[in-house]
Image 1 (cartoon, rainbow, N blue to C red):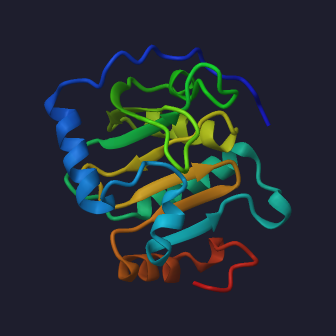
Image 2 (cartoon, helix red, strand yellow):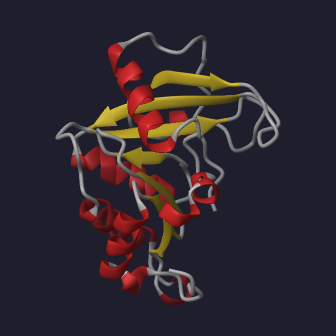
Amino acid sequence: MSIARGKHRGFVRPEESARRERLEERWSRTFGGERPSMDLRMRFPDRWARFHVRGPGDSASDLEASDNLRALLLDLPEKGGEPMCLIVEEYGVNDLSGGWSKALPIDLFARRRMPRDEYYVGTTYYWAGTSSDGDVIDAVLLKAALDEGYFVLTDAEVSWAFCPYWAGVDIIFGSSRERDEFVDAHRDLLPPDCTDL
């Protein structure tokens, strides 16, 4: 696992823009007030599925894992015909897991600052950006496979959340029916210990 990080961004205030308002409205429509993080799987268990991209014994290389992530991402129904959206969650300059937003090769804007609550012990900062460049999407997926970036990808309409990590991806769908259909088409990538999907 790499500990290479980019430098932290300075979060002054959320960007005041139409793109931020559009993202907030679409996120709220699909995920309510939930934060864009890998915790979404616990908030929407009936819409969640996990896929394993490293193969038996985690034998796949980082490039093979990122290729598998890309294949799954391409199979998701894309709504809106606009660029993909990426959201990054960070926890401040004193957090060892911070710096993800600077480590990713994509231009991001300040989306939201959230105060601590019963789940988060400190202030959380969210950055967002869009890209329709396949090379950029491939580069951020490789960062996930290298364990050098945590983020949520979604389509323009925010109809699902794609949360990749070094060994696989959690996908939270818009409905349990959409989840079941996708799982049926990709059973070969379900984790070997999966018994409840």
